[in-house]
Amino acid sequence: MTLNYCGLRRAVTSHTREAVLADFPEIRLIEDAALRALTVEAWSYALCCSDFERITDMPAEGNPGSPVLKRGTQADHLRGVVRLALRLADEFRSAWDDVVIDQDVLIAAAVCHDVGKPYEFDVKNRARWASDPSASGQPAFRHSVFGMHVCLTVGLPEEVAHVAVGHSMEGQFMGLSTECVLVRQADHCWWQIAGAVGLTVPGTLGPNHGLTRPRALRSAP
Image 1 (cartoon, rainbow, N blue to C red):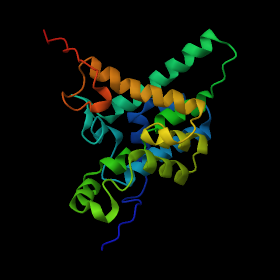
Image 2 (cartoon, rainbow, N blue to C red):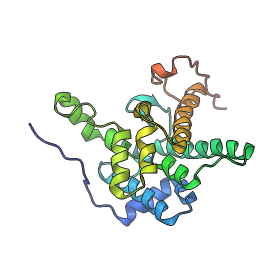
Image 3 (tube, rainbow, N blue to C red):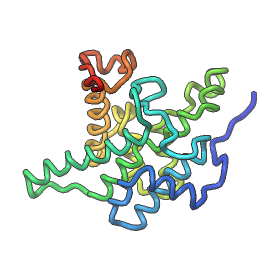
C-alpha cells in the first residue's frame, strides 16, 4: 500500500498571504494583530497543502457536490458567514448590554471555519480517495477535522480551532462554545437562505434542506 502524508506541496510566500487578504478582506476586522496574522497564515498554509492558488479558485460548495452555488466562488460563502455571524452577535449585544461575545475570536473563527476545504476539495486528493476508499477513507478527513489540524499547526488558539471542527457535523458530538454556536448558525443559515432564494443548483441542497422550496431568481432585463 502506498502511504500518503498531509503537508505542504509548496512553500507559503508573501504572495500567498497577500492573495488571502485580497480575497478575504474581512480578516482586517480582527483587531489583535497577532491573531489576524495567524488567520492569514492558516489560510495560506491550507492553500499550500493543496493545488489551489487562492481562495477564489475554490468552487462555491458547502461539501464537494452539495450544496453548490450557481455562480461565485468559495470566498462568497466565507465572507458571507463572517458578516452574518457579526450581525447575529450585534443583535443580541444591542438588545442585552450584559451579553459577552469575544469579537476577535468570533471573526477569526468565522474566517477559519472552512479552512480545511482546500484539502477536502483538492482534485488530486478526491481522485486518490475515490480510486481506493479502503486505503484511507473517502475523504480521509472532512474539512472540519483538517481545518482544526491547520489551525493548531499554525498556532491559532484552541478557541478558534474548536470552531473549525465544531461548526459542522462533528459539532453534534461536543459541547459548543458561544462563538462556535454563532458561527455554526451563520454557516448553516447562509446555505439554507442561499437555497431558498434560488442561488443553489437544483438537486444539490441535500436531505437537510428537504423542506425548502426555492424561488426562481429575477430574470435578466
